[in-house]
Amino acid sequence: MSAPSPQGIVIFGASGDLAKRKLIPSLFALFLRGLLPDRFFILGVSRTKMDSEDFRALRRADILAFSESGANADSEKLEAFLNILFYESIDTENPEAYSGLADVLNGLSGRFSTGANLLFYLGTPPDMFLPIARGLKASGLNSSASGWRRIVVEKPFGRDLESARNLNAELLKVFNEREIFRIDHYLGKETVQNILVLRFANGIFEPLWNRNYIDSVEISVSETLGVEGRGAYYEKAGALRDMVQNHLLHLMAFAAMECPASLDSESLRDEVVKVFRSLHPLSEKDLSDSVFRGQYAAGEINGEKVNGYLGEKNVSADSHTETYVAMRFFIDNWRWGGVPFYLYTGKRLSERKSEITINFKSTPQNLFIGQCCGHSCNRLSLRIQPDESISLKFGLKVPGEGFNVAQVGMNFKYSSLADVKLPGAYERLLLDAMCGDSSLFARADALECGWKFIDPILKYWDKIGYSDLARYAAGSEGTAAALALMRSHREISCSLPTVNGD
Image 1 (cartoon, rainbow, N blue to C red):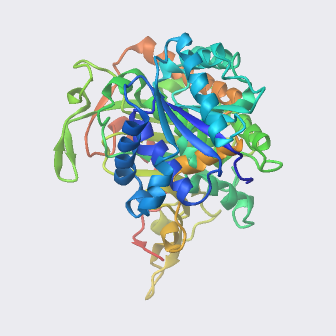
Image 2: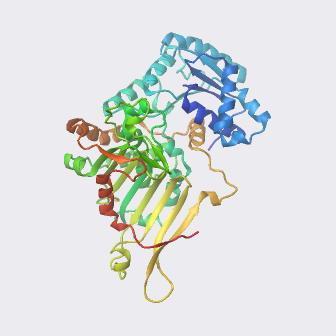
Image 3: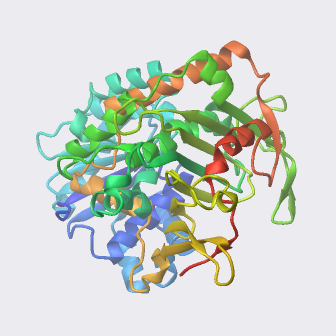
């Protein structure tokens, strides 16, 4: 990757939680690593009234609280970073306010000799995306006549296919497609990117990555946390929009895609789109039999009693918003024909885990049918968080008399690379956006294809009401119906005793 050119970053929503916990700490980590340009500034923008000194004081506290790098940072380096932070309070819904913002940015661009290159980051609620874009256009800040322009748009990108298309169309009136970076922070995680290397750099895996050898694919993101004060947002989103449409479908695409012609952004994203276009449309029977939703009730997490979703702040007492989704679907192409894909995600579950699991088929004749339940003991698991790792499971004979079989594992943990610090997802994606590399950002056609797959689920739920919304206890594994779906096929998972390997 080439080094980023001189530029300024403008963070809209700079007083919000995303800037506080992720964006500013990530930029500071890049600063410490020497990856920011020599000529560079950060301008925070929001409605909150404060000046640049107030903003720096707040961000100093945030860096110390939320940045691993900040806790051990040299005080001089921290102050040097804070000195490139500035703040401007404007009414972001008022197009006329942006002319003053343009004056501020012109002054900072001249002061830091950045060549008027600007990266706009929309770390705001989604209903502010278009007002901000229109304000940038009204003031001419979208113009690349004097320097390049890029805009990073956070999720959720639309609520359904129609709204996503409308948002795309409106943004394209202000910026061109190569200037728009639709972010999914899961794609910035190291293990997700390693899927491509694992598949396409290793001759022991690539030939097996198809319907001839793989029985099923599981992609899961489970959380022990609840909505954590985001009840108002979650009431509008739900797990399907918040997690499945964004994160899980993109994880699935990386696991299922064909090898790109090269690692340039368009070649990579072309293959992602091909996967989305190959998703088998969900019939009403599929929606009834293979898509499940639930909502967490009160329960216990790590020995501590926790409220149900209906007891969370800013959640309606009669809410039917789903906090758990599980589904099975198929991909209609040569590589994956007939292979079931399982996605499941939920809040307040028994374990925090994000993982992709490849379940391999059994051998043609299993001599140890009583030991392996008639199915394969072979599983490849890519743990995305926590404890990023890759694990391969297989069966071996237990020493001693007879043919007693145990499942053993070969495990690689990134933590074993003692001299390597895994960069945070936002570190990687911010740097990519600064460099103009859109490989790990969603393209418009990919998003629309994803929504085309998800839309029938939303419409079906609207049609049937909430009769299928099941409750599950916090700290459990999910809803009974979803677990039954998974377990009906999990006979592929070896139930043998496991011997851990290093």
